[in-house]
Length: 195
Image (cartoon, rainbow, N blue to C red; front, side):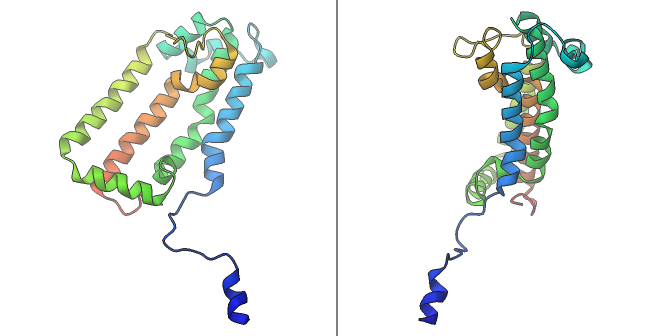
């Protein structure tokens, strides 16, 4: 009976893939996304509450694509707040994903598969991946506030709340720089990639 009692509890399977702790996902993805969705839905459209005006902020005016989104938006103050605050709210993602790339995959097992495939490829693949990332950052910098019919972020607040992350310069930079870091880390084969 004692042996049966000892074995009846939850067993720890050593072969089970390791995953990032739940707090990492909350800090990196969930809390910033929900906060930005609230900003997109409830920030005043044509006024600066509490004297905070993101439309004239340095982070909005120095990026041509953000300026274009603000100019074309039906709710410019909400769009400016969304695009500027995303740089701060998703910064923890950038830091955590740079330190713990496993959060981009779901489990260490999935990450190992990607790493092995990537290591078996040529150096040309690495160079092309880095060039593609730099090209996407450049496109996100210069694009002129385009919206798609599926997600009209300039016309509807709900679309900005759901799909605004796809058109955000700062998030594109975070994801692409993180991808470059992972490409270099995977290619070099450092021991800390699966932390």
